[in-house]
Image (cartoon, rainbow, N blue to C red):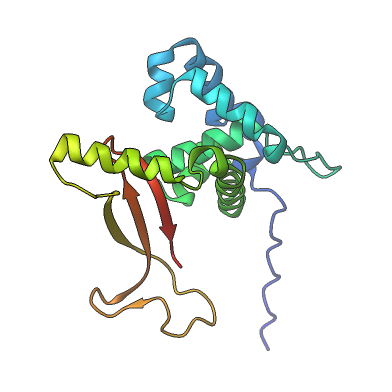
Length: 200
């Protein structure tokens, strides 16, 4: 009878990930980028001042407590990771190697930061339009496009998603043959979103 090979123990933290504090992209690049505003803007898709303003708004939501097991990810690093994900469309596994964090950690960071951005900024960035704002939008369409009584330009896009659990065929797009959610947006004549609707 052949004995079973002993099971290999899984590591708590992979050696590559354990070097994040000294060799990760954030540690080596963040302060350098801040010293060169054009490079910062190219990397984050926003200016240093806009980043600082956004970080100031989001800091309470992006600050987590350190534990005895590990230090939490700083709000600056959380925001940089999220901006890289949103700006480039890189996968979580790609960001895992760049920032030397676990893939599931990257996913959690992005999800938490996007939720914080929406909950913190939705009332100031996308407030409920007033009657006067609707009239102003209609006036803009009349002046710029000679299109009377138009209160916005509407468009939508199907975004492919993994099938949500227990959803049956609710998110299945029969035309495109994949699961998707619809991103719908109404814009004014200055190409600014007035209303967005995602996945309802």
